[in-house]
Image (tube, rainbow, N blue to C red; front, side, top):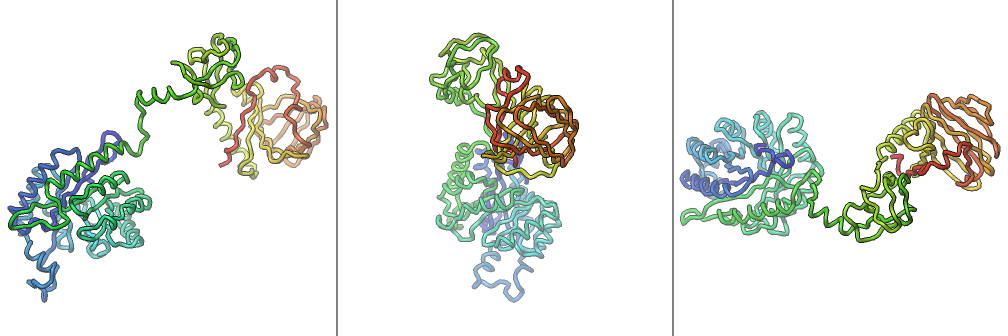
Length: 507
């Protein structure tokens, strides 16, 4: 399409089309006046504008037996408003001299050729011609951008025409439209903009209007719905040429454009998330709960959820409840007294979200390689015994399938990982290797396990395991108790935040 790109998004800006149709009344002087006055209207708005004409090669468009008939409405109208080729070209030159886009609707194949030869910029398909396949075939031979109106067209026919244009790599847009002149408000069907946008997301969708020219609400609604091309019939009333009930005069066009401009301003940016202003961020900050020390926190200590409380008012530079999550790790860089605000300058911050997502990605890949099926809402437990930074050396990932009088887990050991030595006082467990290699140590004795290996571990047995290539195995056991795992390395017990739990990770 002709409109230049908007600087905020890089996408084409809105195009407003003044449809002259036959309102030039076959009088080229009157047509030039319409161009002059509506070009003056366009100067006051930061939109792209087009003025549109219509062509019919009347010598062939009208059957020979009906030439000159005055008792048939449209034959009379088209005949009376006919322009010569030179007159049409004068209008095109005037449109372009004002910096506007010249646009035309041809109704027959000969007129398509004329549109190209006379230098028009955009070609329009009228609703009545939307499925005129001989005409569409001729239109598709041109290099001009094409806009099609869809009044009264079944969705299957729109699908067919869209596919036709897409297969020919045409610059094509659609207009929602109602073919009532004028269209009453309760028949405008503006929600059809949503229908077309959802069905054809790769196309620009517009709104061609035939409502009363005094109506301005519909164009504002069309803007809010995401239409980006807008068309309205226009003209100038004189004693000789009264204006019809659906065409706007310059003053009405200005009111229409004012409503559109205000709607664009109110709607703001689209397709990208707007950057908040400092005033907005400051207002939100004032309403957020701040993080306060529940107890004295010494320099070098991790600041955990149980060490703080959340309350207002929030102090400048204070960490807020919105900054707090299981992925956010804070360490005190100075002593923080009880009840004091926890400031960003008093802590060292680390966000481990990316690290956790990387673990999830690799675990899912190994599970897929093992062809294992995991329950959709099963919780994933990431064990990082010496901290997440050393997870690739020491750690495992567990999926708890069930934990009742009996327990079943899936254990995933990534390549190169080791699970440090531990024992249980109450739990008896059986390992069933499903995939990969597993080196299992039982009270210091090493056993190499392959898929299909089953090993039962009695309470009190010290056990550790590792895998060079990665492994997946089932752990089937008696009930698992959170206080029944004892590591032989006391440093593990001193490691804070040794586990990360994720519920929605499978999809």
